[in-house]
Length: 615
Image: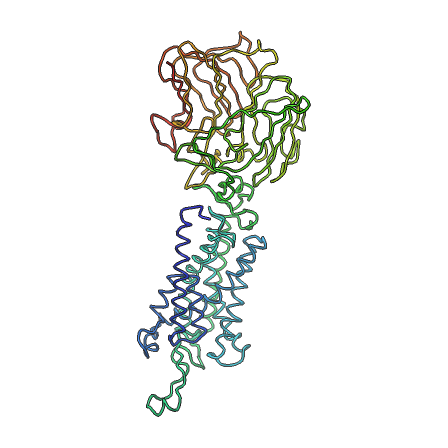
């Protein structure tokens, strides 16, 4: 599934890879005079390196004209390419197979590196060098194992020294789909890792070819028939330059020891160095293909649980796309069962428009943001049947209510979290009145930030206790982070700061316009359903009366006038504002950044802003 912009590049890249490998395979087996082992080596390397493998083949090995292969491939730099191709074909195949296997088994990355090294070294030494090259090198299989051990050790060290940090930083960086063999990003990282490994292993292979420790490119010409010899074409040996038997190394023991030592140190550095920056103790199963926000600071001790909390909502989990004009906070009508008011609520992943052209992947109650409004009366006995259709566990907490402890919704404290696909019934009697709300209390920094909240408005049993107004409007605040097509839970952490802000699930200018007449009053119920900032909510056109705080109605002697209230996460204010003069009067957060959309003003503002249109 296309999730990030570079997924398009990966699709195009692997299309080019397949085309390049197909060309190399066709050209090799349709006439290029290279031994079969090298034909397959070039094909495999081109499968791993794509057009770069094709380029190496054309520049170094493809016979330009019939009969010129020996001369064309004779330069030392081309011979070194052949040696490196042969090394990479075997070693990379072992490394990639090991990486896929350890990922599927859920092994941590540090173990993955060790398994990859021994798998690559074993396949390269025992199969590609000692077995496939036996006819070239002469001698028995075990003689070839002994003869090839040191050159293969040096090559493998150099290659893994380049591949290991490339894989570590890309797999454990921002997009951890790269740890999953079932994702295209994994194969993209493998491809890039092989390219880097080729570059780091080329210099030692150059030296080993120069000193006759390894074979380079070779030419295989078929032995001519008697008829050909009568025609004057003569016999040709099946193996020409760059191969042959009886290679005698010119390298000294100290030279080999020095090169093996240096490549060994490079290998250790390449495998250990990433451990100072990323958590190599984690596996593909631990991180679950999490995609981290741009700018997140990754460290070697960052837990997998933190990565999953901060990760983007996976688009494939979206089960419903709400219409662009859909509004949240819709009143949910209960049904009566033996005098009990029964509500049905579910949580799922949806697509939700906070602006006509900005869609977030969100967690929602009953497919709306905010979730449905529950309007109750003090003394009601209620039952809320909750179903979890999220890809993770969750609960529902009834913020500010005095209810039985087992109904409080605190995950792992008062109840087991509701698993994906699970259900739970909350049942209690309402003993308060005022402005309250409900929200997730299992991973709330993630789930509440992604939309799991809704208003709970409770009327007093005695209507005379309610502070009257002509109009009543609830304002639920939220902060969002949307980057590069993906939605992340907004948090006060590096890389997680919000860039969109909403009132009742919409950002200005998509927020409501509230019509009023001069002299009318409106009760504004501010609810801090957001997680992070204290929002100083200000109303233009004159002060208002603060009549209730946190669900408690203030006695008349305690009420006061203000034009701004600081609404912190979890707080509620009820204020009465009077329309004194005609015009468009703003209700907005007094932090200017919070009245912009992705740092840009639209039609005079954005984010946490709406209009009281007084006529």
